[in-house]
Amino acid sequence: MREILGRRRGFRLRRRQRTVQLDAALVCAAEWGWPVLPGVGLKATTRTNRGAGCACPDPGCVVPGAHPFDPGLLAATTDERMIRWWWTRRPDAPVVLATGGAAPCAVSLPAVAGARALAALDAMGMRLGPVVATPTRWSLLVAPYGLEQLGELLYAKDSVPSSLRFHGEGGYLLLPPSVAGRGQVRWERAPLQGSARPWLPDVEAVVDALVEASTGAPGGGSRLAY
Image 1: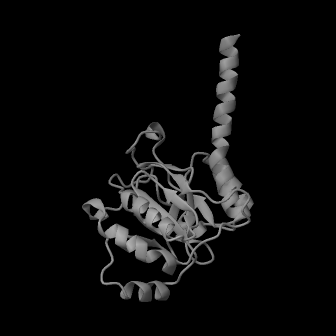
Image 2: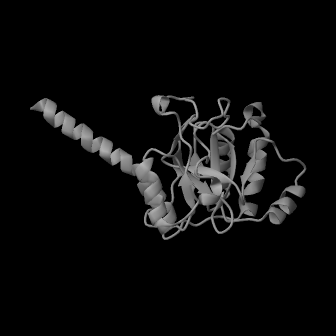
Image 3: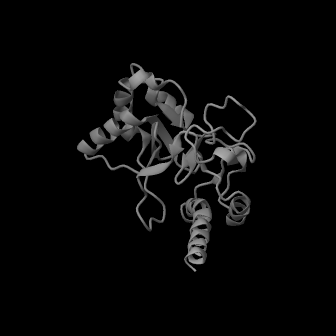
């Protein structure tokens, strides 16, 4: 009897876990208006292992599991029916946000530098939006910006560390609760519960603190990693 009950509990738990990614994708698309698509994910036999191989054909993929592949980035949508179709077939697929346009943009930096930057911004009393964290990098979501606006902003800086990356039009960002080759993706600063659409700061408001924190990032942070 105990064995049967244990199997039933295990089945219910697996069933709940299989809806987590779909639920997250639907919140992003249907409630917040953020276009999403399923990421490539990790090889099925090693999905839960850190550093597992990417499911894409490239054996040397530098961002295992953490990028679009099939469908491609241009397929990102807010259409609920399409999202349900994708994740019904691939329930463990990572949730990928297509940045830019009407969707949020992001600025990412090494995790150590990200923690330092958030502390500095908090000390300034700066209001921040959602912050996405992986074991290696943190990403601050910001209001949409254009290339011209970003170019003028960065041109005014003496230097911009290679560890600082900008996810704008044509870019993408992995969202929680995805799992990629570098580990679990989580909210360091989660959107407020019940938010109609998460508030986002302008990139100008945060870039100085991010540049300063990234300048001292260990190893320069030049290797792309999620």
